[in-house]
Each structure stands twice: as structure tokens, then as C-alpha cells.
Image 1 (cartoon, one colour):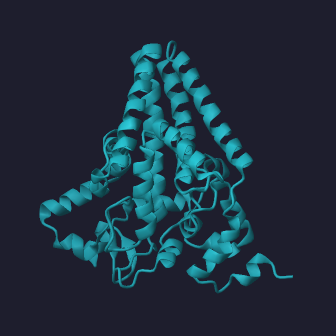
Image 2: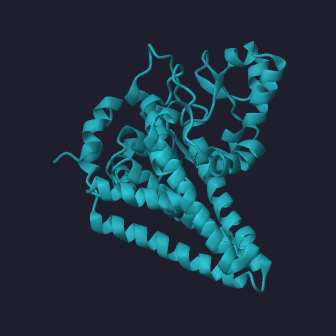
Length: 339
């Protein structure tokens, strides 16, 4: 009898796609359970934080900080809905995604389109700019004016990338469709419909809990989830041995496997992030439900070690800023200057 690991030693990225297809079917019962154990605690903690805000601002803030993790998990479930991997019925899955998009301040149809572009072009140097973290090559950086280099350094600074950036994305950028989507009405319907629903919820929050509920519950919950979410997205592709190629050399499956990390998190964080750290497998086959990604690693040890990094190792990624086409590494500004 051949075990799964015995047949995978010399697999190419394209070969993996056929193997991973067997994990694509979702369980409607399991998906409903995962939604319930994420949404119900989120609502209960919200109510608890609003009640506690009457007596303790610090207590309300701490509860909201914890609830940010449940909001993050709801975003990850919305992410699966966007890939059609959450439920067998795509229409129901889309409406769950749209409802969660109100909670996460993310217009579902707009985000689904930009994220689809990200999956279709991740690692392609000639198709940067939509649904990804802006990354310059060393040569492109040096060709910029001093002001252009300053702006790029500011953009890549951790305080901007993981502090101001998430605030801008979720509170401003998500309010209107950008780029080519501006010309299509369905994306305006998605954005404006989400905006109206969010405005109604915010009005209800202030009416019931006052401005304390807005500033001590809504904002901390949302911003903590947004910052962690941006960090996760960052380290999933912005690591030293990531994969970039010019269009003529770019291959979809190679970029998916080698340009996405296996962010090996502690079990509790893996749960709150809905296994999104198993990102190389997700990019190779995005129709796999998040709760089945662990099955893939259990059956195929080769994929466990592929582009693997721990929580501690990932901290180094915050200092990597430029793609060096010669060494095929993501490098820091200092390393690029020395080179």
C-alpha cells in the first residue's frame, strides 16, 4: 500500500493540483458549525463589552481586543465564501459573505474581485498593484526620485503598514470601488449597500450604547482585527524566499506554491485565523475549505516544510522591503544599499 507521502517527493507545483482536488468538497454541517462558533461568541462579547463600558473603560477595551480575534475569524470565513469553498451552494455562500462583509467593513463583491486578481497574478512582476502589497524591485527603487524613495519607505514602514494602513483600508478605501471596477454598477451596489448597512449599525450602536460603545468597543474590535489581518496577508507573501518573476517566466502554480508561506502558528492562533497560514496550499487550490487544510498537511509531509516559518521567524519579514532580482530574495533597504 502506498501512503500519501510516498508519492510526493518529486512533485511539481502543477502535479499538486490534481492531488489537492480530493480535499475540495466542503461539509455544510461543518461549515455551519464553524460559522456558529465564530459568530455567536462575537455577538456575546460585543454585548458584554457594551455593558462593561458603563463601569470600566479598560474592561470594555480588553473584551473588545479579544473580540477582534473573533472578527478576524469571521473575515477568514468571508474569505472562504469568496472562493466558493465554504458551502456547496455558491449562492448561499455569497450571501453569507455579503452579510459578513458588513461586519468586517468589506464590500464583499468588490473584495472578491480584487482578491481573485491577486490569486491570478501573485508573484507576477508585470501584474502588481491590485489586491497585493506594493513591492518594488531593487532597480525600480533606485530609479525613483528621492521623494519617490521616501514615499515608498514610508509606505513600507511597520507603523504605516500595520497601523495607519489597516485604518485607511477598512475605513476609507473599502468605501468605494477603485480602478477598473469603477465602471461596473454591481461593484457600486456592493460598496454602497455595505456602506448603508454599516451606517445603520453604527447609528444603532450609538443609540443603544452611546459614544463609549463606538470608541471603546467598535473601534478597538475592528482595528485590532484589521491590523492582524494585514500582518497575516503581509507575511503570507512578503518573506525572504518568496517567488517573483517577469511575465514571460511567471508560472501560476510555481508562484502559488513557492510565493506563499506556510505560517506555522500555535494552535490557538491557527484556530482564530482559520488556518489561513497554510497559505501555500490555499493558493495552489483555493477551493479547499479552511478546515480541510490541516488534512492536507497531515497527509503530505512535503507541504509541511515548504516555505515554513514560525511566529518568531516571521518577525524578520517586517524589515524586508525590496525584491532583488539577482539573488531572488526579498531584502531590506540596508541590504540593497550595501549591494
